[in-house]
Amino acid sequence: MVSVKINQIFFVILLVNGCLTSGQECDLAQKSYFSPRWSKDGKWIAFHSNVTGNREIYRFDYVQSKVERLTTTAHQERVPVISPDGKSVLFFRTEKDKKYSALFTINLDNREEVPLTNLQGKNLDPDWSPDMDRLTYVSTSDGNWEIYVMDQNCANNTRLTYNDVLDYSPHWSPNEEQIAFISGESGQEDIWLMNSDGTEKRNLTPDNREEISLSWSPDGNQIVFSSRKSKTEFSNTDEKERSKKSNNSSEIFILDLKSGQTNQITSNTHLDVYPSWSPDGSKIVFCSCKNGHLELYTMKVDGSSQTKLNLN
Image 1 (cartoon, rainbow, N blue to C red):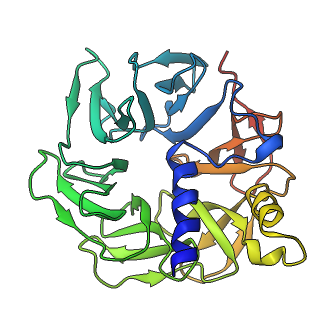
Image 2 (cartoon, rainbow, N blue to C red):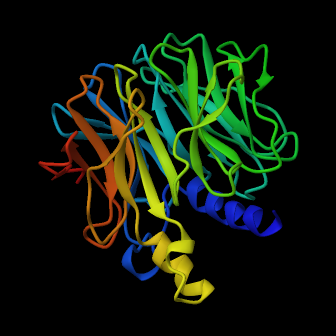
Image 3 (tube, rainbow, N blue to C red):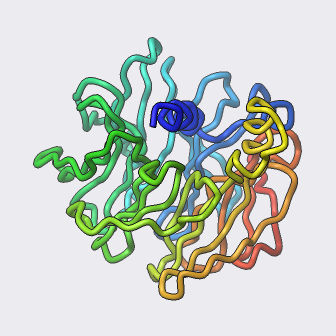
């Protein structure tokens, strides 16, 4: 259990920074783009980037190909989620000393920021429920990485998971009845599903891969996710080499929830991570390291027509 948990902690540190690194193949010292998420109307894509030397929140006008910077602080802002009504962006901010992180919203009209959490520890990986009455997030306030839900007005904060392993990356289903998330409960990082009150947990990907991030299809029947090979698949190399090869083998898959079948839609020798399904169901935006640093691409849901977004 100890070795598994150490591996998970290292994994989540990479996750919190926005995307898994791949050693020499993906140079995050160059300008990179992380964690894209579509707006509900399909006109915007929110993301965070280090193009200024600091991680800040941006949104990209998908129709007019225009980039707009939303935060300008000395701290680190990550994982933005555009509200379902399109009026604000939810994100988490890590203080410069890196001891604490908190959830914030920023109003897209007047840029007013509102803090949502004041718990000690780290509060991250937020996601809005489709009708905006609740949000889910990850917190270490109880000493471990657990998933919580609270009302939009920051009341009725409820813990949903109780594990001695890491639970993170929670995402609401479109009908708001379930939450998909990633957990190390099985001994490696898999996608799990639970009811919105934390009951009836089940493992959706009990295979020999480690999942990284996920997004629901608009109809709620499928989940797109990124996944890397488990280190156990590289048994003929030492521990350091296994970790390097595992981190370099991230691809994107689609899981059909009714049949349980999984279909791989990317096949590359670099990182393809953090997919997000467009609200009309026709496209997926994702991070790719095709050119040596993370950039944003879109593709059709079968993996074809991969197109880099012009963010310059």
